[in-house]
Image (cartoon, rainbow, N blue to C red; front, side):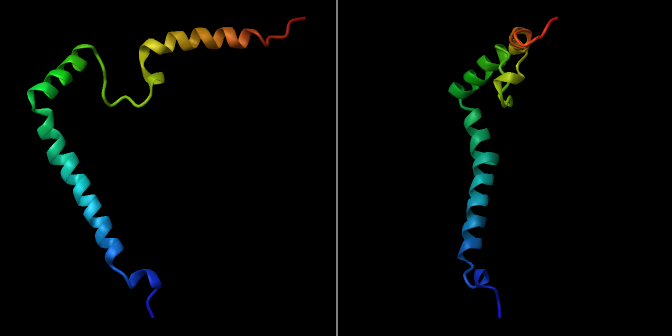
Length: 83
């Protein structure tokens, strides 16, 4: 006797279809769209400004690190106990 989830292969076919569509979109369609003049201009503008499209969080950017250190210094100095 097979487990109940093996009786219907439609779920696996749907999963394979979604994965194939994602690979097609990510590997073929998006690189093709990046070659369009309007998108190429946006990509070039962002590169000239130093914008990294692979950055995940604003906290990883260098311009925020000094501000964060300043904030943390002020925040921790409030709770210092002196005698």
